[in-house]
Image (tube, rainbow, N blue to C red; front, side, top):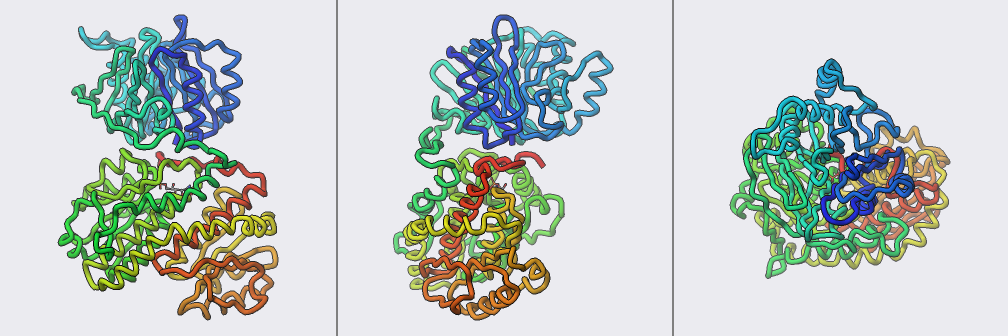
Amino acid sequence: MCGIVGYVGKQKAAPLILEGLKRLEYRGYDSAGVCVAQGGQLEVVKKAGRVEILAKEVAVHRLAGTTGIGHTRWATHGGVTDANAHPHLSSDGKFALIHNGVIENYAQMKTFLARRGFTFQSETDTEVLCNLIAYHYGKEPAAPGQSRFLESVRKSLRHVEGTYGIAVLCLDAPGEIVAARLASPLILGVGDGEFILASDASALVSHTQNVVYLKDGELAHVTPRGFALSTLDDVDVSPVVDRITWSAADADRGKFPHFMLKEIFEQPAALENAMRGRFSADGSTANFGGLNITADELARVERFMFCACGTAWHACLVTEHLIERFARVPVEVDYASEFRYRNSPLDPHTLFFVISQSGETIDTLAALREAKRKGHRVLAINNAVGSSIAREADGGIYQHVGPEIGVASTKAFTSQLLLGAMIALYVARLRDLSFNDGVEYVNALKSAPDLVRQVLKQAPRIKAIAKRYAQSRDMLFLGRLALFPLALEGALKLKEISYIHAEGYPAAEMKHGPIALISEHCPTVFFAPKGELFNKLVSSMQEIKARKGPIIAIVTEGADLPKGLANEVITLPACHEAVLPIVASIPVQLLSYYIAVERGCDVDKPRNLAKSVTVE
Ligand code: M6R
């Protein structure tokens, strides 16, 4: 969740680190700090609050060193204070450490170290690890040819239970950084005579597109002369240098006031990128290069299991609907955080999928590992190339939508819906779906970017609607079938960025409880597309109207609502069932966005949240 940056090179480290931290701020924004090795000191500047507050503080210190580390924090152990901000120094002042993750056995370590005279300035688990490194450093010299700095980090990490992505500075080795990871992402950018460490490529892509993705249990020893990788067991690792396919411009806000709005408007292009080259030559089905499963094997699958968290879990629910509807194969969906501990019986003919934008969500990664432990092949839908999930899955589909920076997921979600619809098509065509129905389905998916463009044109109207409801305290979102997950998604989007209490329900469930919330102060966003259930949806709306609840209806062309039933009507273009969830996402994204802006909320950095949830 936290953001990590480290620099070894010829330039001043602090400005570069601050630039990286600004780009990583979406990973955590409780506090920020930087440490630079200079003049025989480890100079630390850290502050509670945003990176811009840190930048002002850094400006009054003369940080000229060319090796340094920096951090943006999402608080786990200890409150949001200057003292708890990273980097942390060991009590002898020899080491500085930044950390992303949780050290579960830090309390025992702290007792052990306190008995040996180490002292602590913060409540964090990170400071304990920093002192443990100092303890090992002081205990015994390294063997000839070994780096004492590297070995003391290695020895310390062998005692850690939990997760970490760390970068460490040592006073005695001022041009060096030792970094390591276990279940928290860490990337090493390899530049021309310089190296940049980061928890996420967006912090380094403006300097280099050549990167090494560290694997779990690996350490990197970075010096001005080069870098070496090794494992916790001290085995050398040959680095694989990958190339990032997107550039710094893709991670810029451009003319938009927020990343979220930029990413909402990027969706037509994102959908085009996600489907490019993924349809068969005869135009009747989907093609996936990296699934690593043959058509015969897929045709024999008797059940699918999908796991994810948050918005990606909603994408699983829509995919469930489409696979069951078109391929007639049963599907189960579970929260990754539940599945990992539930010891759910998995039939051997079940194919397991995870969906994750970041590919680093710890619960989803743990669900993947649990399924693999049970002997299952696990496939992933994932956006971040080289992520832990991408590496550990047996096969999968990249979303190819570029970096998603806004904490509220938008373009990643609709591309997950698209890929889920394509999986449903692929499996359906291996079974009963006819060639003609396949062609119709493919053409419908190809039309999705244009349909989304049409809905985006309604942004000014949706903005006006948002203004009228922005001061609501509660909101309900209702939908049925494939749009029930959209009701969940609409409610999640609204609450995470505007802090309005919102709930999503299947429309017909309303009368089993949520109807008690209805009043003139609780608006309902109601998905009511034309179709066989339309009249039933209208009946549910009448029940809301009878209780004076305002209704924002999202309908499709040709769905004629009784006059005066809805207070607001947003009309979507008529479209294929597989495309409707994608198109229906747009108005709820825009509604949430404009409501949050109207309420003066920090849309891209909502309180208490972080983009990628790498702790339990
Ligand atoms: O990176 P992932 O897709 O695994 O993230 C899962 C959730 O944390 C994420 O979708 C979260 O719910 C978003 N903030 C929703 O907008």
